[in-house]
Image 1 (cartoon, rainbow, N blue to C red):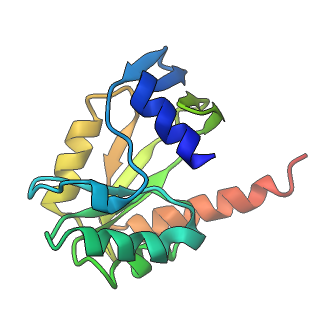
Image 2 (image 1 turned 60 degrees about the vertical axis):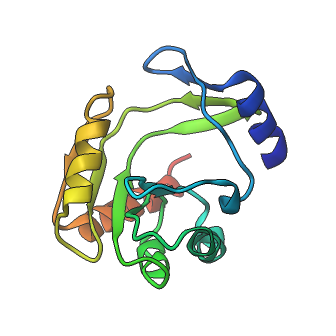
Image 3 (image 1 turned 30 degrees about the vertical axis):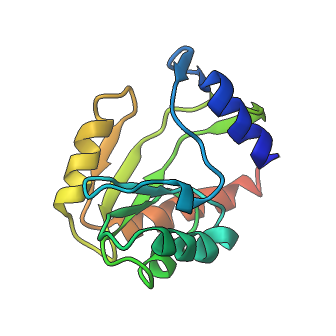
Length: 166
């Protein structure tokens, strides 16, 4: 599934559809972090499933020795601690939006909840403020918080409630 998604993005661009219209983003997609040439002003968004977090963080660390900020945009509350074993500039993201990938190269945005950012384990950082400012240029509701862990725990409780709904 993943190789087909990467091929489609490289061939046709990433097709974003949904609550903010249809957009095509022309950007490179790779299968390995070692294929990326990292730069000092880059930011990493960790968006893998939690059970892949350790391997992804280790692979990223092997791919760059730069002290890049890493933003954990995953469900769950343990990812930041895992990433902090590999990187020192770690941030949490509380992402309350819906999306699905119906076919390779296509992502459908189905909900428009807020995105919160903060430093791990607590506090604010210039990186969080800079990323929030960049994301604020989109239609997503963005905020920063010095207590991102609390916000992620709240989302976890919301997700647990999904099991009780039909």
